[in-house]
Each structure stands twice: as C-alpha cells, then as structure tokens.
Image 1 (cartoon, helix red, strand yellow):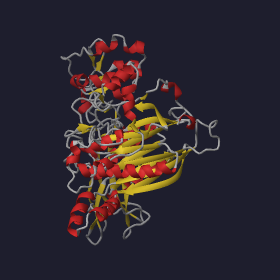
Image 2 (cartoon, rainbow, N blue to C red):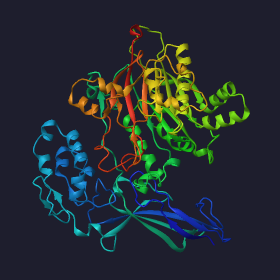
Image 3 (cartoon, rainbow, N blue to C red):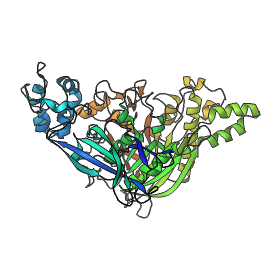
Image 4 (cartoon, one colour):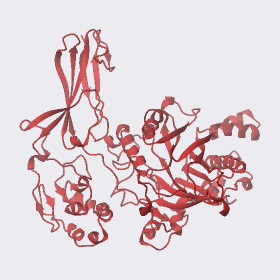
Amino acid sequence: MLSVTRVHLPSEIPIVGCELTPYVLLRRPDKTPTTDDVPESAPLEGHFLKYRWYRVQSDKKVAICSVHPSEPATLQCLGCLKSKVPVSKSFHCSTKCFSDAWQHHRVLHERAASAAATEGNDEEELLRLNSSGSGSGILSTSGSLTNVYPAAITQKTGAGGETLVEVGRSKTYTPMADDIGHVLKFECVVVNAETKQNVGLSCTILTSRVIPAPSPSPRRLIPVNGADVIGQLDSNGRPFSMGSFTVLSYNILADTYASSDIYSYCPAWALAWTYRRQNLLREIVKYRADIVCLQEVQNDHFDEFFAPELDKHGYQALFKRKTNEVYVGNTNTIDGCATFFRRDRFSHVKKYEVEFNKAAQSLTEALIPAVTQKKTALNRLVKDNVALIVVLEAKFGNQAADNPGKRQLLCVANTHVNVSHELKDVKLWQVHTLLKGLEKIAASADIPMLVCGDFNTVPASAPHSLLAMGKVDPLHPDLMVDPLGILRPHTKLTHQLPLVSAYSSFARMGGSLIAEQQRRRMDPASNEPLFTNCTRDFIGTLDYIFYTADTLTVESLLELLDEESLRKDTALPSPEWSSDHIALLAEFRCMPRARR
C-alpha cells in the first residue's frame, strides 16, 4: 500500500511571498521509493495523498526583529511610528541590535519624515539607550524601556490558547502577511480513493515562525540636470517626461553560482533561489524601468519565472543564452543575458546575438596557421560569453516638430564579459569585438546607443579605457598580457562611438547636499561608483551603463549605495539584497535631431 516515509522542508525559515515546497518521500505498493506526487485525480492502486496547511494561532502577540528576522522583537522605535516608517521596520531584538543598526536606521527616519520632524530632538533622544534595561519593551524617546510583550514570546508553540486555521490544501504554500509571527503546520496523509477515509497516521511538520520578507531601504532617483524628478512622476511612479525613458542594468547572481561555500556569510534561507527570485522580482518591478537588462539569468529561470512574471507587468522579453562549448552540465541551467522592455513604451525592431566563441573561431582561422596553436588559442578565447543587442522603436517622442514622420530608434546592448582575472587579453578582445559590432549598426542608422552589463572589469582597466575613452594607451599594463598577439597592433584598439558612462554624471552635478553625498560614493579618479559588486573577497565596480553622448542626455540616476546602506559588517548577497551586485538605473532623454 502507498505510504509516506519522510517529510521535511528544505528552508529553515518561512518567509512571506516565498513558496514552501515540502520534500515528501513515498513508498509505492511495490516497495520502491518515489518523490512523485499522487493526487486525487490520479490515484495509485486506489490511494492518493491529501495535503493541508494550517496557521497555528496563539493568544501571544509576536513581532519580528527588522534586522535579524529569525529573532523575536523586544524593542520598538517610537521615532519610526512618529515618522510613519513602516511598522515592520521599527522592531528590534535588543538594544545592541538597535544601536548597531542606527546608522542605517536613521536614514529611514530622514526619508519618511518631513525636514522639521527629522531635525528635532526625538532622534537624538533615541540614541540614549537604556543599557541596563532587560526583557521586552518599547524604546521611548526618553530612553526608558516599558514592557510590551510577555516573557513567553520566545517559547515554542505549545498547548493552550492555540487554534489551527486552515490556509492551504495543496502540496505547496506561499506564506502571506497574515502568517507573520505564526508557526505553520503541514500535514500529509494517505487517503483511500473510494471511501475518502484517511489511511494510517498523518505526517506533520511545524515550521519556525513566518517572517516578513526583508526589504532594503528604497533607492531614490536623483536628478543630475537640475530637474525636480520627484515632481515629475506619472501615475505608475515613473518619471513623467514624453521624451525620457529609464534603463536598468543588473547582474542578479544565477542560482548555479550562488554556492554556500562562496557566500557562507549569507543565511541559507536568504541564499535559496525560492527566496531570492521573489526578492529580486520585487526589486526589479519597484524600479519601474522602461528597459531592463539582466545578466546571469538561467535559461530555466527565464522561461519559467522572469519572462512570465515580468509579462504581468507589461514587459516583452528577449534572451540570449551563453554558448555551451565550455560549460558541462544541464543546459537548462546555463545563464545568459535577458533584456525586457515595456510594450507601452517601445516596440521590437531587430535583435542581434553576439557569440564571442564564433568570433574566436574566425579570429584564430585568420591569425593562427598551425593546428596545434589554434587549439591552444581556442582554449584561451572560447569562454561561452555572449551579448544581446536589441533595436527598439520608441512609442513616445520629444521632437515631433523637428521630424514629424521620423521614427525614434534606440539600440541597447546587454553583455556579460568573461570573469577570469588572468585573461585580461580576452576581456579586452571581447569588449573590442562588441564595440566593432555596434559601430557597424551605428554606421547604418542615426540611432542612440546604450551599452549595459557586467563587464567584469574595474575603472582604469584597458577595457574600461576603451569604452570610456575610445582607445587604450599603448603603454597600459593590461596590454602586457597578450600571449596570442590578438591585441596587436595596439593602434587598432579604438572605436568611434562617443560613449560616456552614465554614472559619471554625478561628478558633474552642482553643489547640493545630495550631489556631495553621491560624489562621496564615487571614485574621483575615474568618476565611476566606488563599487557595484560587494562580497567578502572583493569590493569594486564591474557594472556600467554607457550611452552615446551625441544623441542622449542623462536626466537622473538611481542613487548609489554605501557601506551604511548595506548595514554594518555585511556583504552581498544578504537577506535584503539578493545579488552580489547592485542595480544601476539611469533616465535618459533623446536629443532633438536638430541639436545633433
């Protein structure tokens, strides 16, 4: 007879919005094990599985720490309540937790409250914590602690004062806001298909308490040309300007690379793809970008998650998977570049796919005569990297009077350059190959261009110099690494596209406090962000959005992060930020053709 052998949950902590899928091991009537579902619609020898999810409701009031979501809260910041900060952000598990998080926490007050409220004395009084206080309480503005939660808050679910509320009847369940602070109970039992009676004992699991999905502080869109962006938002929260559009570039960290060995500092539940995908989607959707360029999108995740989910938000999707001449494994998990655009803002005109492996084949055929040398060259050059180039037509415009019948086209390149630090020649060759392809497109049409992606190259490196300056100094140290001679003569390492890094616009802003804050987060030597990638082993800039400065102007930029925004002693990914990279976003305006 069908029986349940084992049931467990892969995630230790249930999180709002993140699907829970229990692992259920069955024994078939022939004694063989299986994890296949046996629904009522397809019983096995007269039996099927019945599932139930329950919320265990208790009379005890429970709140969750906003910094350590696996811990119950014992303190609440009254300043948050006065400033109308979301209540979930106001809870802390200890005075030390609140004190350590203060530099990050005070930003919530500054953004949520009016200038008059945030410049008062309340926030200063919040710093005077009662270090001798113990137990549960609310932190008052006078620094004293008053009891608000019973001492039993940390006790596990037990008998007395508890009720079970059914919340689901399928194998999977996605916790909701009403579940926060409650334990969930999963029940699985074999049922006789004819009598509908349970057969044998049910198998049950109790989860830990459901926590809200941690969310980072919102990143503001900062004007760089003096425009008041806050006053120019449309009904969807996007900058309202007929001739402007926004572009997002984001390496989302493919699940296949998100190893617990590499990112051991990130909690296992926050590193799990079931959590990260929802957190990433929330972040991407929140930016409301007109064009979205993602890197490290797995083939299966594009088909099964990002394409259908972003379609619900009005995006059309295009994808270029990496080639698999080097990769060994399931081809469904190969990552690539995905570009999305809003159907109400753009229409698709043309797509170009760049496979650097094919370019490597052509290069070795032309430059290297010997067969053995070709093999060596291909081993160095073939790395499966790709680029996706999309030509779009805008459904808006700011130049109707200049050219009433002229289409406004836009070319968007999305790429992920090879990661190896030792292969400086390969990185530079890939970037040069991409730029030469874009030059051909530019020669055939008067078209603004964007070049976005993870270039795996830091400011002042040879690839960055080629992108930003249009050439590479022949004495650049990166050119010393060229065992195949593919970079010679060095005079060929040029291009004619007038590319400028979008984030360099922060360096040209006026003398406002916001401008100064952003400049402190920039490298003054390169006018690039101090970092776009932040792990325990590396912190620096690898991601860029370049634009053709003769056809586009930068209107505003998504503010940069600093260490305070990432919280103390934190690297990426984290519960709040689900990639080891940060997103870059820029708002552009097409120049009227009369000015070009």
